[in-house]
Image 1: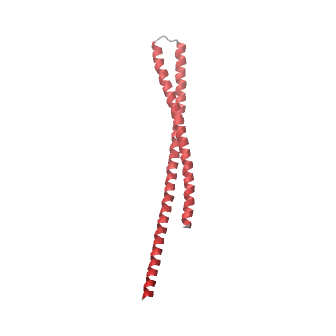
Image 2: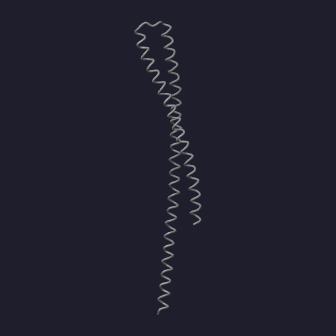
Image 3: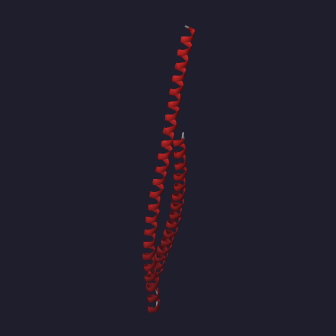
Length: 146
């Protein structure tokens, strides 16, 4: 019985660790989504700008306006590269936290199975002891009635 209490306490600890890992995972997931959305916005902005640039270049545009748009497109490209790195880092962090969460779930399941196994063993032992006592009582009654 005391071993089950020890396992129950360990299970509580592992469940707390799992909750912490779960919070970290969801936080990293939100971070990844935010950074990915930022990247999407920048890519969409660049695509729209390039489309208007192509249309504008066929029309009347001064050299200064072309330089400004080219400079803005270059700036966006640099931002996109930086955000792509951030997305990759956020993805790695999310995957790491997902792995930790999976490991935490596995640990919790291990302790739940150990507790379940111990309880099953205790029930079997109790039943075996009860059967022995019933056999002893039956033998005594038989010997007394003889």
